[in-house]
Image (cartoon, rainbow, N blue to C red; front, side, top):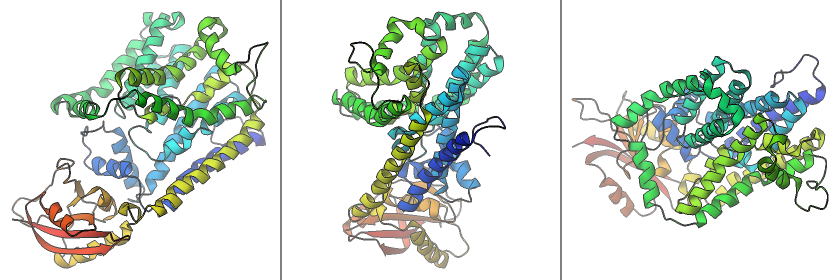
Length: 502
């Protein structure tokens, strides 16, 4: 069955393209499964937040944690299933990129070109290794983008409602999405064709739907002393300020999307972007200038794509440049998923889809090799200095469970106190205990049964020097019932202990 909705008489080439998209998704889900011993810490964090099903968390809004937890449970509590979730999130984003291009051109060739140009970027591959608060925007922002365009083009109230819903989901995925929607609102006010919508109920329906959709989370923020806002401000205030962060952000944006530029070169038939007349500037650069000098050459939809592709990242860059703040490079990458549509628009001619397809396959193989090198070979080299790269979490969990069942027969492990290296144990233990990080003392609460002096909790951490074990115990006041060690590598040991309240 074809991934994209097409007619019954679609040609074999479209089937081949659909098949390539699915293979691409499958390969980049399998690579980390086969080369990593444990899912990334971000995704481990998703699960120890998500299991509590709170309306918000101290660092982030809750949507990505909820989705991670739900998918984890539906996948029979297999941690590696989150790699599949990561790629499904990207696949949904690719679907909306295709639909956006179809909405503008109703041209399947240009729509596939838009998808493949984005798929050729490092952002789509190396920036999509894990599912977290930033990468969730790879699907949610294109979805909101699509329904804004539909609302603008067809004037239907249901599209305004869907825009509000996806905008709300993006907000409770990551607050930085407000920058994207702010740019969207400014375009609505500045563009004369869009401004006509202000005389209709459509934008107000979208805004009301958005506000209703986030109202419960706003209530949670207010009820919890604006903890997520405080976290962001504290992190910003404590961080070193430097204009070099802006330069780093710019270089990362170039790294993420330079291969998309090369893909566009292949898409438009020449090895380099063409020039006209005596100008030596690439056409791609000259057309960016034409947007603002001769805007009538572009439809409102095209101008919207161009603005929304460039403006959010430009604002992030300028913010970093003038304030010296550290700006996450993935923030910009998550807002430039329409880079393929943008490059198709400004070239103003039909792409050579066969050449683009060949380039996409080649660059995907290259990035697959880079990812295998990074996740497999490099991690193998670093095992002696980073114990988390060497721990067999499944085997360690089985040993801990075996000892625990002898000490506390027929009782579940309800809580785990762990350092960062051993945090993943909480998802490999069959009892799936609540997690607490003693180094920050506030990640999750320790839940105990009233009247029961056995708290059913364990402590785990890694060490080289036994003095580190003594330092770890200072974080809480408990009696040790049983303790043991598991050898890792490079002199590292995994220490585990079962505790009783004093």
